Length: 158
Image (tube, rainbow, N blue to C red; front, side):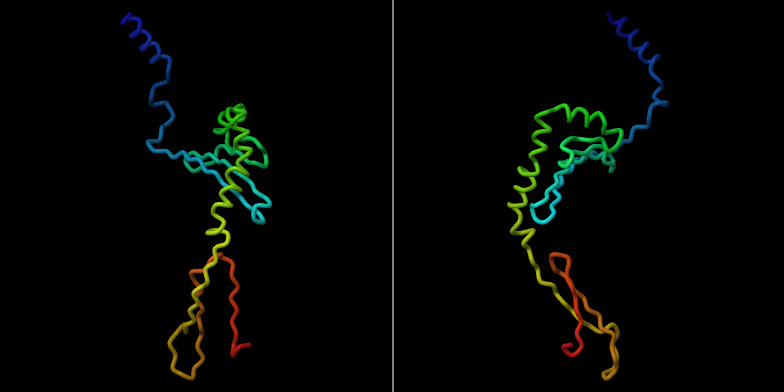
């Protein structure tokens, strides 16, 4: 029996290409998964994405607009086909717009969507000039939320 095993190992080694010909295997790699909720006009329009990445490149994705997994790269084709064959998984993903996105929107709305932080405004001269000279002023606005603000300058209240 031992000689058969040795013969099998020798035969497999002879039939397979040498390790030097094999594809270079990276010692480190990164695979990750990311779920996203994209909101428009509050929760009026919600889109759920379930995305899969290998070494920074997306290879497969579930999009609630499609209702199925799709390969983004050739690497993702087998996974997308397999996941789409899993009916319970697909049904669960299709409900994520409500069970994951809208649910979490409601949980975090008070400290995310409704969050307001007043800006800190500092006005200072660009260069120190003697009195009675015109100075170029710089206005710095920091620490505010949300990010879209309008800054207006007035001279003598006008």
